[in-house]
Image (cartoon, rainbow, N blue to C red; front, top):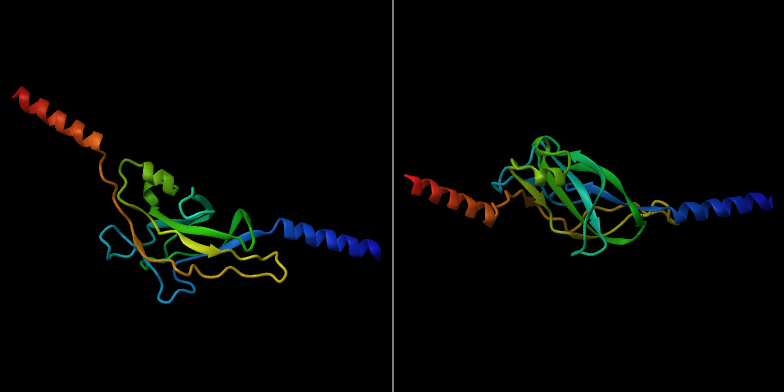
Length: 179
């Protein structure tokens, strides 16, 4: 009997020690109204040709790390309905900052790959949202809540660098001078 009780206590302590925080990866669920993601024109909602992923950081200005699965936008709605994602290395019930990053699927297998693509036509990052993670291993367990405070955002096309513009101008001057 004592061994059974001791085993149960050790097992529950181990589960609690390894509990991970969770987040609801959705810009629609629990938000009224939903907060769609828009293309570079600011009016066209993203389609299923785009994907998104949750990124988390301990601070709003900190380094954000990709967590969970990459999820496609649902239809032509601008919404990502990814469900509950586990935040590895983040304790259940912890306070973190969450942002959603989106990109065109054909431009890269991740946000970073799309950003590095020289043919990129737009990537986007939401404003970080303070979030209290769910704690499914807690006592009592708590479910992850909606991304309250999440706001719509639109993709942007990166501006050419000053060096690239300078090189283009210099090339044009050289060509013109030859003539």
